[in-house]
Image 1 (cartoon, rainbow, N blue to C red):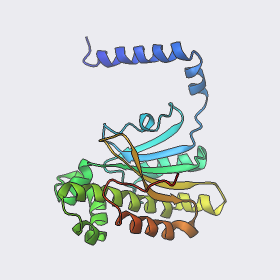
Image 2 (cartoon, rainbow, N blue to C red):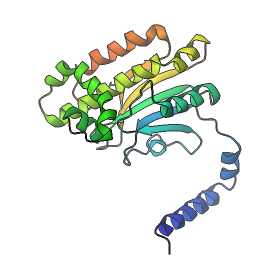
Image 3 (cartoon, rainbow, N blue to C red):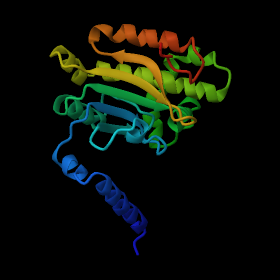
Amino acid sequence: MGQLDHLLEKNRAWANGIKSADPKFFDRLSNQQAPEYLWIGCADSRVPANQIVDLLPGELFVHRNVANVVVHTDFNCLSVLQFAVEVLKVKHVMVVGHYGCGGVRAALLDEGFGLISNWLRHVQDVRDRHQSVLDDVSSEQDRVDRLCELNVVEQVGHVCQNSIVQEAWKRGQPLTVHGFVYDLADGILRDMGLSISSEQDRERVKQNSVDELVQRPVRAGRQKNV
């Protein structure tokens, strides 16, 4: 018996359950992929992208790495971004962090080791840029979570600065970049107040997001007017 046979059994049970509820589901799925959203998130196993926003396979294009970082020299991330924008024509890019992120904690506390230390340097750049904001937060856990929020803001900025997004905006392609942080404690996405749809809006919206963020409690998110 193979070591992963239990997963294969679960896969068959899952597939049979889907087909029982919707016999044509896999036929449709195999013939097209037309998501409207690209999710750039953390690789943490507790943050399953499709389930969090209740979307089916084929409805959400996903890229994940440690601490949801967007680096201009990361060809893995850039390839996903280019395919999503230029081929799939997604309308929304979502950068999604999560509170209690181990990568962000390691970056804040200089606890990285080996290769991961080089990757987390990008998050430490965010830490250093906003050190005065973090110094105003009293508890270590709150500083970690505040840095999770600030990291999302900065990574949204990196997405918007990228030539793939810049060229899409220049040719008039509808594309908006958003920032959210997922709370493991209650399953809710917190809106960081970032929805950028043009180069003209980029700096203003990003700065407004930071200004609002430092005025509200950690893990609060922007409140919707209803």
